[in-house]
Image (cartoon, rainbow over all chains, first blue to last red; front, top):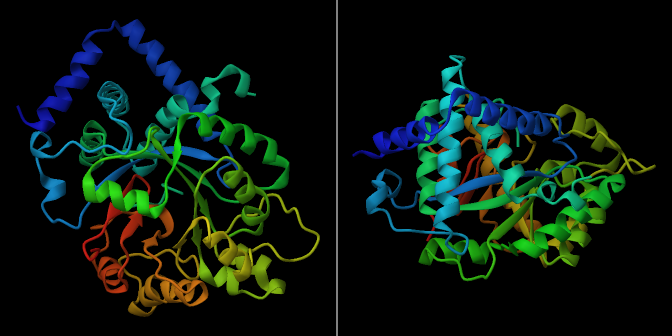
Length: 130
Length: 239
């Protein structure tokens, strides 16, 4: 199975686990977090993001199939978290695509911001969320 | 960074796929992007940094070099980069000491023309070069950090080029503009700091491949890393 097909299957499988009502809950949760992110003052507040580390000094590296690429991590390896992150991106990617609106770089930015805001900021800790 | 005007290297779906491949390999890092850091937000910044200290470790250029060289991360906690854009005076005075208090390395992205701008002209420079000042902490006119202050930061943090005049570079940009923003900005910093500057970030954060002419200037300048909206890329000419 190609990477492309594997990702699509991953997202489709994840979505197939849930009812339409449950997916609606996820969509609302995403929109709530997205709304919080959109309302941040970018020129003064810290904006968390995930950035991919890519070595383009070797011309073929970026094009390597996933299963041939070496495992690399800028964190103590947390494969489960990586899988959850990729799955969440896939589910929300398909959700955005299903709306049929033209998608732009800022939509990717928002998607990553929402996940970063949720997964590694003090907002997750109620005492620090004020 | 502002993604609204960024150009993607491929279709929207393909760009997301490329990022997913990176995430699935674990080849990613956490960053927090800051611009102006006014005094009245210090309490909030301190809460964030105290939280980050518990969960993440600082990342300097040597850590990034090591990761790209070995494919491994040698610290106990995941890495977190604090990015500070534009060279604001309040970065130096307010948040840099906090970053140090909590053991983090800041990456300061400097449009060199802002720092070189005479104090009396800095507000005009900011307003005509897309540098946003919502809250001004100062009664005098200086809003950029000084070169002496940047040299002070350079002892503990990373200094990177963010062009010379904060001008957007496009496929239609003149060679003169590309030379000025990509190469001359590096020379400005290196002349002031006395050592090589390895990292570059342009406005709106497109990645390598989107603007091949600009890429050639990055190569000619000898940058090692390009920070874009969704990636940090180790560049071809790096050793």
